[in-house]
Length: 87
Image 1 (tube, one colour):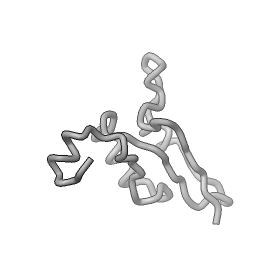
Image 2 (tube, rainbow, N blue to C red):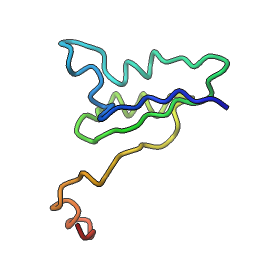
Image 3 (tube, rainbow, N blue to C red):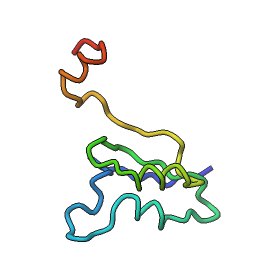
């Protein structure tokens, strides 16, 4: 099995540096794994740029791994307290 790994500091920010540029949803829509690629794994995403379109694109993508890799160690302490965690 082979994977295509999309890795970045914040992959949900893909294209935000270009006016009218592509988004992560566009990238996933256009990524058609070949015969040698079974999965597309996206690392790392942050909630601030998740859109309804990205959620829909991710959900219908046949080869994008069915989980979200979100590094929570960077979350605000207030948010951790709200959900019962101890920062």
